[in-house]
Length: 251
Image 1 (tube, one colour):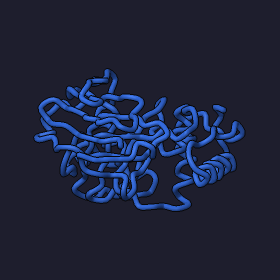
Image 2 (tube, one colour):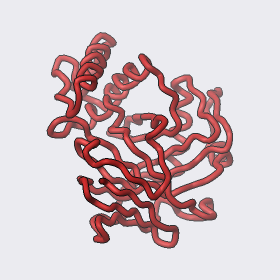
Image 3 (cartoon, rainbow, N blue to C red):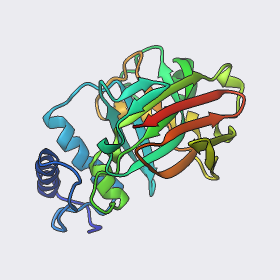
């Protein structure tokens, strides 16, 4: 389905995913009668689900899919410091992503015209290298619009070393790689998102939804390198040259 979903279809899909999640993973495919055909509609479904039980966010992820920005929060217990350990069997399909994230040092409330790049970057307290480990929770995988309806797989964010003097670095071009049990399996990819651009757009998109971004919240900005799948028993290292390593054990 590629047409814009009606509000009734969004509710139908949200009901379906809430019930399916309560019944345990993996998730079955969203029925064709309410299946999103665009990331924007997938995002509408997720926000309908979250609005029913709006657990406070402590961090955010953003994905731009076919020109649509999709947001998903991380909640208490999803964000941890490196080195971290997560049971591998909590994932249906673990995706490993090397990313740059920012912690905000002040709040950003909705404002007419939005916040400028200089305003947002001036409010950053720290920048980090991180592992984002999304969970593709659908049986057999799912197209991105359906993933968007499930929070783009929001599951775990592991915070690594700070990026010293991040303002002077070309963050979109940082050398990075993903290592599994010491073996390099992926390197920095072409066409990766620009971290500062994603940060600014994410702050403003959260505001557009009527929400304030609080001081201390972390925003991660998309995969600089990606590897699928992460499996139980693997030792995962995300390495950014001259910055450091982020470590995750999938037990």
